[in-house]
Image (cartoon, rainbow, N blue to C red; front, side):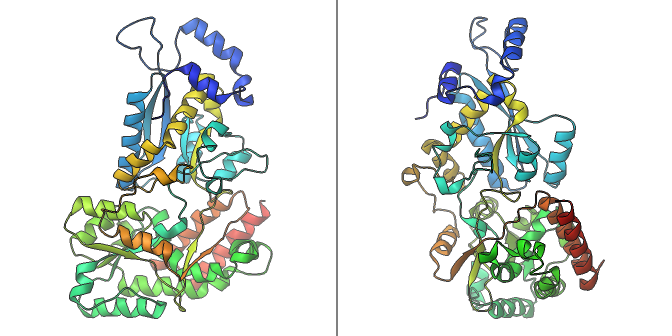
Length: 457
């Protein structure tokens, strides 16, 4: 069991004072002398001599109900066992654009201590994140995180490093069995599957675009074979940057996206939130639904309808290959948990953020996550984790990891402003799917935007 009960113990694990903290030490001491407390927590049992807790905020993206429940369970368990820290949840409302929220947060100078990070490289370069101490990284398998150019680690994973296997199609297994349908082994099989469901008079696929980011859930599997072709050459976006490829090369998957949207996607997708696809599926309004939550989505379905027989698969390529993007451990596309530089200016906040992350990567915490239907991060002690295979469809997920047709590929851009371009590209695709823009216009404006991104460095 992880024991983090005293502030002195936390500081001892941090070792030599971080350079982020050292500069603020004098101010922190002066503040303590004036206030007699740290943070905004309250003392224990009304004893004025008892150590008061430091309160820190944890900003995280909502929308996936399983992740929401995991965050709540982990933070509750942490707060109950810590004598030094109180973590306050700071959820970003579902439907909010995360990149915009981060920019607003930065503009107002209102950074939390722990951040469920996006656009990582942008904020590392801007000096907004603090290094993750070794007392945290030593708990995680080395391949699950990476150092920036300055040698520091700025984000650590909040889930298993299983790439984008979470970007898949969840489906009604009972419907498949009753109608003699099978999981597709090729892309043509997938198209035939859509046609067979539609011929039955049913809606084949539910997807969402009320938030911008869920638009990736259908697009990425369709585009994966085209991106994978550049996997050994630094990725597709690097090839476009170097003039060896162009947005025009994505015409075919863009056409596939448009055709499926027009012919097979349940109406109302433009105003459907990602979490709503679960309801659409269990209420038989669609036979399949896009997802990016992996087992988390299966768990959401199980909570809504315990009797629903769910399964999942990934849309295969024409030759049957299942192309899956690797998790990025560095760069602007890398996600993970980070400590803000603003928190690091306060010695107690930095120590509390470190204490929480140390707790996050313990076996007991991993087991708690798994019990909630989440895939725990790749910790060093992963052999001790109790995996949860009780959720209907979870065996399909784990089988994908062993599928002989699975092929990992990389597609990481080193452009520090790539995330802003990616948001533009998502919105452009939605406008194309919605009939507001032709494919020709979409390709032209996306190429122009990418050229501007490259020119801006």
